[in-house]
Image (cartoon, rainbow over all chains, first blue to last red; front, side, top):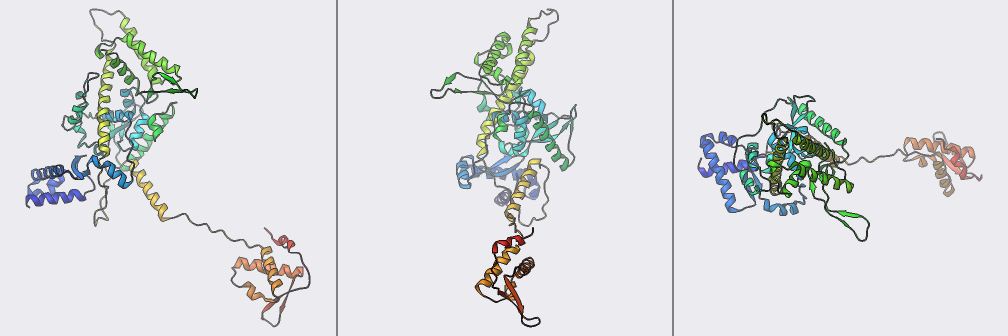
Length: 238
Length: 266
């Protein structure tokens, strides 16, 4: 297959695929046409072409694969045309909680609350409902609390290819008042070592069990929420 | 531990026309957030926090909250207790030979850690806004894949709920609410009125004609009504020949239609 043909074939697959296309899968499909190296070269070529042409969409690497997605600047047009309001922005509390889950996963609700210094059950519920986190099993400690981890939707939403793409937590400065945010957005591009620590987990072995776990987790969160007089702003917004 | 965001009061303004207070509140996301704010505001060294000063300021904030009738969440009170505990431990004399760990260390570590997550959250917030504008094509079935293998690896409860909701909506659209057909109750009195009016207009009429296009329940009502009218003497029935038409005629007798209602039985 000619280089141009290979590129066109890859484009066709990307266009039709319902989810991000994994590089390895493409490499396997085009094993006789140069395999991994050739595929990566063409993917980069497609990405570059779309970037130079400044079209309506781009090729992005997210959640372990490649997909076409619109450029952010077309959001107003799309919202208007499709008559969509778009999702609410995540609250600061939700983002803090998400940050903790992202770096410390799998993690339990009490552990999140401890790190934030406030009860975070309501926020965890919101994040579950927004598909940003999911139940990853139960921790083998007293009370068998549920463990949470981030989802594929989380990676897609934040445009991350892999959870390991997050910059190391240590890079998020120790000094108060120092503005480091601009570098951080750039730092997300870099690939540091994984920060996930394996924990003793009882994982759900079946889909039914996983779904049951999630339902039970919501019950747990709701139960401990109702013990508090003041409901979180997250819950009220729901 | 209690609540999510705890507002911290700023100066209170009184509104001219209403006696109500309008309070502008920046929100803190917990005691750690408030502590960090105080440290930053006072330009304090986080590694050498003047614990007496910070405790005073922290509790002053809580007092203001209470003055404004804001509920001070347990999380904040717990932190106040922790600060006082650290303060008292620092006052304790300790052996020069065996130096103990700085009582503030644990708190400082927590603050630093929280600060990092706060920074990550700020980065996430920026990304959240930008990425909100990035749309991808919604999944669509591929041609010729009716028996496609279903990937259940990332299916959570909410996916199931969403799917169920969609199915439910589709069902509602495809199955509009059923029209309830009430069974018509035929009253004997109605039939009596009807027949009585008919024979007043034209007499005689054929019973067969009067029974046409009626269902079974109605026929029974008509039959009973006819018999009652005969009994009352309002009408008479004649049959000219065997199996011939039965004719209904008006009689001379005046009867009061108001009594027809008496023949309706529940």
